[in-house]
Length: 319
Ligand code: AVJ
Image (cartoon, rainbow, N blue to C red; front, side, top):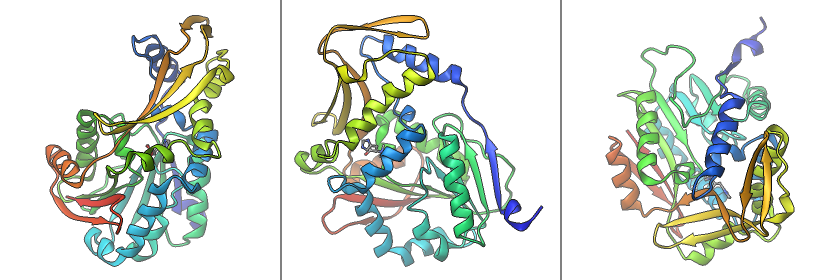
């Protein structure tokens, strides 16, 4: 084996197609139809998400990046050198690049549900950081989080940026944090990005970008279901709808049926009435104190919180 082969390893813990089919049929047959947001991220969805992150209206990515850049020394000092750095839902591993040179982790473990995309991105990263061990894990981090090998006496740190935690309703969010806590162990920590409550107009614009990336991202769910589950959604007969629900402090994304219609998924027939909607994503927004309470419920202590000047976004270190 040459050196680069050893530095890059891939572990497949991929969920079965059967889970996807069962989840979709169960969700769409419910009284309030839904599709779980983790299914956004096939290869196309992951790429459209990159476009969203780069668009003007979507402030979270650039704001979080600026918070990390502005506080990099303190962040690195807090995380500690020589850690095992684990990123659930790593996507394009863009933000971790800000940390790597200064942090010099023993290994970087990106975890993502999108297999081919993860392989491509993780290999690119390993080529770029010629000293870095990259152990990519294809898995659904909303299941049991398990590392592919036993790690002893290494300081483990999880990196969970982008406000991915916002996808979960608060009770589930506590469980996700608990899973991460188990994974990093008693001496471990978590660097997490959390989007903040703000003027609903800013929030609404971020999920209704003018170019239509978010709409495309939302509808790609149906394209994916058609392709992978032998279904016949008429994608043009569903409309992207995203709004801020002020009572629940969350953005809600829906796909609204524009007419009465029937859809067959793997031989199963489902009907949608005109105006009926499918919930595809919640994106909860927190105040700093509310998020801190949530973290404490999961058994974490808040060590440090960093904000941008406009207080649009927050980054926390929990231990
Ligand atoms: C990756 C879940 C944090 O909720 O803002 C972006 C996903 N959806 N635009 C978010 C998303 C629509 C994003 N998260």
